Image (cartoon, rainbow, N blue to C red):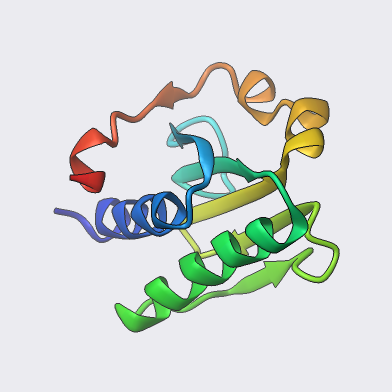
Length: 118
């Protein structure tokens, strides 16, 4: 498994473990210069959004990955966890409905992550 795929799996599972809703992993290779993968999910409260973002950050660090940036944590409306080649977007439900990142990056292929949560 490549480093990117391992990191993608870690981030996805961390979000799932904190009951993030509607988790989507987008393959951004050839579409965005920002990252190879985006993970997009949401929580239903400020506390849940923060818990999801913290779990992603903590799990990545436990596995030896560097968290380059964590933005929006205090506001808990849209938290961005920058893990380099994988960027995790943790939204509050209303913000996710408003920004519609999946539609914005509609050309991106959705990764099948079922095996990472088993």
